[in-house]
Image 1: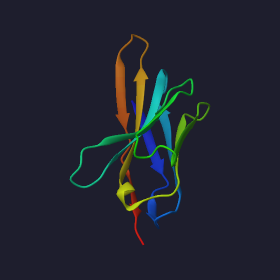
Image 2 (image 1 turned 45 degrees about the horizontal axis):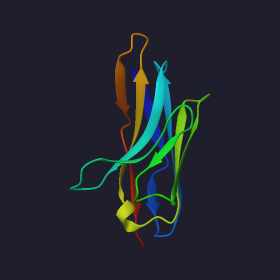
Image 3 (image 1 turned 90 degrees about the vertical axis):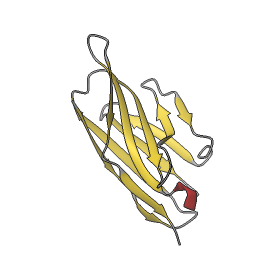
Length: 120
């Protein structure tokens, strides 16, 4: 099992910034892709950004130029820096970790979610 602890959400004014963090612990062998998803009320969960163990990143079109995902492989921690926040960014943000174990099985783990509200 992998445990994920998220932090950094909250209330932000439009145009503001925030940084989300997610630390993984437990059975961390084989962690490769780390990502952030979000889900707004009435919407499906969507990918915000992902980063592979080698550093390759991928962003949703809606956040390109405003978001930066990074990771600290030594601490098994992934970060999401978001700038110029908009009300449409309001959602619960979830950390996701993909792991391949020693026998080649793939596992996905989710954090508990952290609320981000962009409002004046």
